[in-house]
Amino acid sequence: MSIKHLAGFAAVCGLVFLGVDYEQQTRRAGLDFGSLSLSGYAGTIESRYLGHKAEQRLADLEQERRDRWRQGGKAYLPEAPAGMKRFSLLERPEVLAAGAGGAEAESDPLAELDQALDSVRLQKRAAKMDPHSWGYAKDGEVVVLSVHLRGLQNPNTLGGMVVSSMRGMGLPEEPYAVIGGVAFGRDQGIYKRSSGKMRKFEGVLGFGERATIVVHADAPDSTIREVLAAIDYDGLNGLLEQPVPTVGNDVTVPAAAEQELATDITRLRSELQSIEAKAAQLKIENIDPGKLLAGAVTGTTAFIDVTSGDVPDPGAVLETAYRERLTRLMAEAGAVRDGVAIEAEDPAAMEAGGNSSGATSGKLAGLAGSLLGVFTGGSSQEGSPAPQDSSGVSPVKVSKGLAGDGGEGSGCIRRGTTRTCD
Image (cartoon, rainbow, N blue to C red; front, top):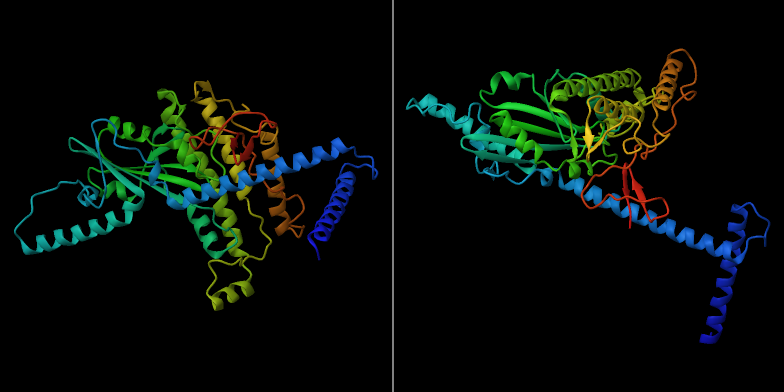
């Protein structure tokens, strides 16, 4: 076939394609064939192109987020504040010892053996912590920061059920501070009683998918707070698929309200984790024996769905409730974001009309009805909550350089709670 014939054939194919596409767009507009004007059809091409471009950018942003998640949270720990030095735990594993710097070595062989074993233990611990930790020191004061990232667990797998049920077993924390919108509490477990001068604190960013900041410190509160304030909370928040609307480096809380707010936030997490644990226990009690046996035979018990499918998952509703109630607590405490007071129903904190208290209460009631239906012979589907849209929380400033303002027609797209614009 000559080039002339090939060109003619291509032109005919193009016309056929345009004709089919025109007919489809006319039907989507609810018009009769031929009623859609040329300019109107051209508008559909432009809107579809822009939509495809926005979707591609959204996909690129999500891939970039996943790449940063795989790299871990250590990159968002600070450089050494003024007057301090940052060090690797592999260089100074001894700082992890209880009451670092302890007594002089004795000449007793048993004491030397005991110290040698302690040294090996500390080196192994330092090697395990180093990929997600930095140490900070000055004038005999030491602060060690670590960031642990935890992705969403499949609640219908045996592993996911165990993890969820164990989350409801945490010990209460002694409130410490709220910095960057993250509530920190002092550990009340065995570590507190056995760690000498070292104190341990934890702050959690997120609920299901979350970043946990762990602090080991032999330093006064002023030094600990200085190091905590230097963390890149915006960057850590941007690692989450659904960033928390009340977390960021520009979020501040009145000093007088910190202790009570830290207590309230800890209590909120404990309440939601207790509900999550109860749902996990119900799932465990309703495991499908056939699926469990199949998983045991294939060695995939921790990865495959072993439930009977009767117990609905409360995860999406708990995520929504966590963000709503956290915002309300921050507002009541007088928290400020970028110089503006946080308000419970502020569009800058909650998506207008999408996450009202009434909406969440309705979803909670629907979920409760579903659970009751399971055990009273009703349908587990009736009254079950609609899937939670990840954009249920409004845009806030997260990962530096990614967030922006602008209307829907300004080339902006949304990822979770983040709006990104050209």
